[in-house]
Image 1: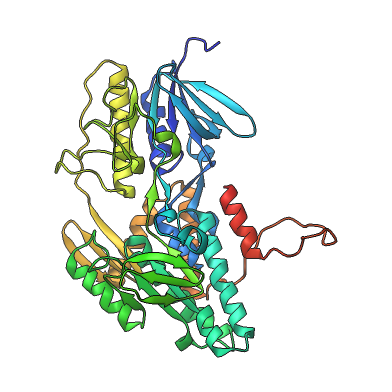
Image 2: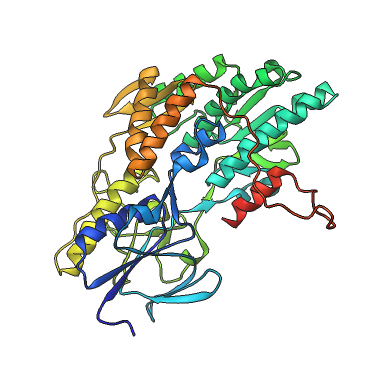
Length: 442
């Protein structure tokens, strides 16, 4: 029995979904139950994942428990399998399968990494989409330094300390900056590893980095990276990845023991429903974020193609747009439930920022360009305000200040339970493999 209450279900516990649930709790009447379905019970602040790679912050500092953010919402940590718009129910599973009826449903599931878009990347590349990915890359970098310290062959040592990053957008540029800072600080603890042998190669398929920012800031970023001896290669289209080798469309081969992929995204399987209008793999919405042809169905965030009434263009997949979409959609859903008209989403972005390492950043705020230390302070201040929950803000603030005074943590953070070493096959997994397994499970 469902009782007298109706169900409003949000699929996806990321930044957009959790923010929407927060706002709906204050706007939806008590005769509605709000459900949040999420594969994890935490929100990850993805813009800070490069800082986890560079050991600038601890993994837990970029995650906020959803149950501490929401009061009224019912949270189910499950994986959604199908959505039936005729029967109006959602099928999901955790340890056991389950179903949930809905009267209103919101898709806020985001996207997942699509490293399969390049041949061989899925097997030989390292994605950066989750905290598990960031921690695995961090461990991989440390593992390579440890191996290079004891390897007798100088050529192999250079291969181990060559890191290739595919993609020169925000994630790729910030990971490059963080990795460069980490190597500069950590190499003094590895006696057989020389800084000149540590190489970072950043491959980008178009003519300039950070296409979302102005050409001037993109050129500034390129100049700073090259001054730091970071090998930036523009117009370098990756067509294949093999074991420690990247194949470019030009025929050139790039060798490196660690290949990090910051490009490519694909929607979740349950979003490929024939009833959902889609474009570029995303759910196509009306101006008010409702889905045409489906009563009581809405979408926002990275999984949706939401038109911005301010300029008529689709909204970019950034945190500030997800935040504003969640606020507007909460108002629209509440209005729709009262039988009132909804409003189109309209927002002018405040600006964009990218950290480029070494206490420097590039930023474009209200059309004004900044770079260097001032931009870096702005980057940290704005992101600190956006991180969910006061507890996480305080932890992150303390951690950032700690990192300015002390070197990064170079401990290899392997997590796996104790096993019986007498059993066949045990003891053969590396700590990196163990962390990777945990990441896949998450």
